[in-house]
Image (cartoon, rainbow, N blue to C red):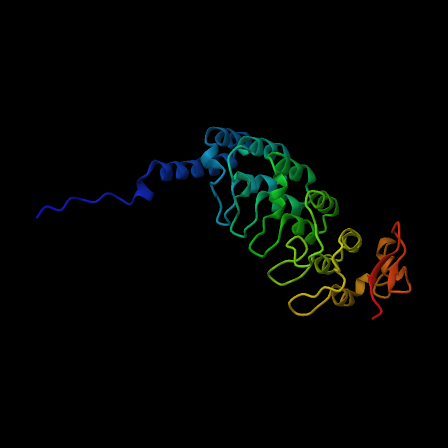
Length: 260
């Protein structure tokens, strides 16, 4: 009996699959030579190129450009794909978008280019990675104060301590936990000043508060090492009627914990 030979599955024989593979090959080759060639590929194949993951970690060319600090190239790539739906929301294997990476490196110019390139670009600040971290959280996690303040200005922050802007879903740590863990004490002060949520008394999944974390950091105290003026903030406090107040480096007293 004659049995006709079946074609290959559509996914491997369709032009779109072949096109994606060819674009990936072209981008990989171009990155080794000139970023301008990568931009040309994005311009010619923008509907495909922005999704082309060219590394084992799932990075697109835009992820790599942001990571390498190629500001002019990032601007060109973002401009090219800004009209492609979802182009700036593409994640790598860790769930990070290009904005996550820009925030983590503290590059405000790249953050502005990415967010400002599309209507309602502030929605990009709400995207969470695999650990439940937003770009705003990434800026806080890595101590990038100026970037944090910029991204913070784009989003509405309510008093809900469970907000993804404030708390990481994977372990329950807040941005204040992370600031103190990284010994970014000036940024920690900014967070207490900006947020209405009671970050100081918040607990993570292990029941640890930010003040517990602070207690494990000898370098945060003068008894542990010689500190600069801003680190002396922990010593510049006094008791008020309802709690302890930081009085130095602040325009007004801020309550950081209760006596009760």
